[in-house]
Length: 209
Image 1 (cartoon, rainbow, N blue to C red):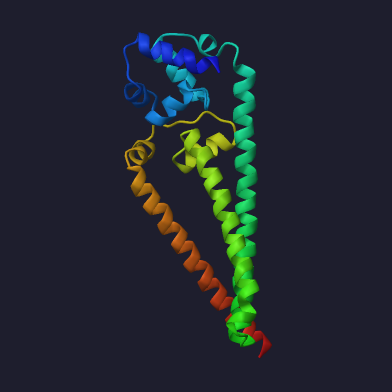
Image 2: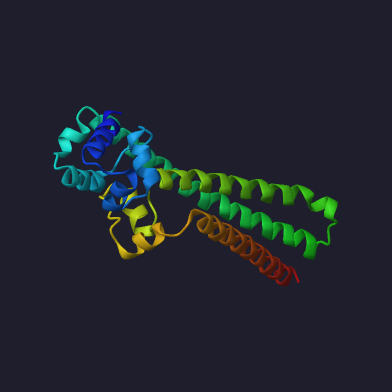
């Protein structure tokens, strides 16, 4: 990936650190490092900002890497779309399994041993959802996507505008705090699934008389 080497060379020539460049392109320092190490590519909006900062044309920055960049970004978009469908589908299946588990416990009065297969199924489905979410989060992190608007623009292949108030605010949040927030949302989702399962079993009980 020659574009990474060009960014590094231009940054060094301008006497800028990765943090300095990250602040001017509205991305994280890790994103600059990923670009320079050839792990990811800058998107169109970032390339335009880089060309202004380095007083260079976009063509001179991406010369020889256009096809690979397009293919890489398109691949990430396709994977993100598929992962979103996987998360939605398996979340619905997990909720269905939880409702079925609640029916077994409250309607049919099954023992714990009898409900183990259903509980394991719900756990496996939850694991698949978490795996897909972690994969999607890695893609978002690699492409420095923070806000919903940024993700949506990336999804539709549009330029990603990171110079927004919310985007700047989100990028100032420490990573440990983001992890705590993500765990909190996972716990809320699990509680919501249990709640839906409980009321689903109540509805089934009422229908069965």
